[in-house]
Length: 186
Image (tube, rainbow, N blue to C red; front, side, top):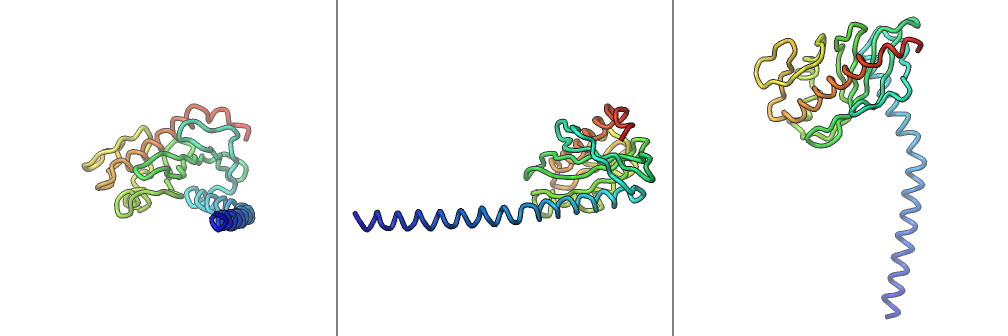
């Protein structure tokens, strides 16, 4: 009985020490990870709207899949918008950016992170899928055949992912159309 109690106490101490170390490492690395994520997001926004020299985040701009909205500016004048959206795909949350010009056309999309199936839903990152959105005006639908002007051709074997990304673009468009007049002062 004493041996079992002694082993239990030793195991408890080891577990406590390991938990403390993991918590400490997390606290040290958390700001670094957040800084890298912000840098990656900024680089992606600049790649989507190359003429923008500033991105101003709209405070409180969240609704449904829309996690954040940024007003893109060039020489202080608004020239477009970037929406950060987080739809649920087949494998879980997809974090992506959708860029729009002032006329409401999609300038491009960029997937920041996902947990979609390799070889299927993960193909949403590839230009063969993501470039379909350029120049389109929502609402968009997904099709399995050759797409029309308001359609996006689904990724073979990944209709759920294709639909999630397309619905996120639609949600971002709807949000921007409904609220962009409020952001004139940014």
